Image (cartoon, rainbow, N blue to C red):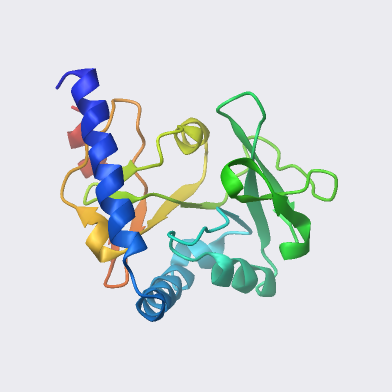
Length: 203
């Protein structure tokens, strides 16, 4: 498929899944968020890791505040991203609570670098990856800025995508360098993406 056609397709898909999320009732969203969080906290990867990399959720995203509080209560280190001004890169910083956050790029809460310690590159852990949609092979449809694609390309740890069932489809358009998540969680299931599936998709 032509690059321009893929960009147009992704644009239309983003609009579709954003609309699905915006139409969700608050009570329904809260229930689904709770189901997803319970499954995430049950992962062996969560139990084994000392560091949780996670986004700070916005209104239309799967909630991560519960995860952040749970991980801190479990004495894990919690790292959240901050966009690097003038680039499409982001850096993660350890936080101890919401008091370490300030309003940053795109209206997202980000860690205050004056209060927080930056995570060293190459640090392993479990990274919770945001996405407007995911597919059955673990590929994600992001917001189009490329921040997470760049970060994940060199991230050495395990990755988990969290998504509502109605925002999962069998296949999404993706590029050669896109990295699928290791685990996909919805309110209904935990799906582990096998190495064989990843290799078959690349071939």
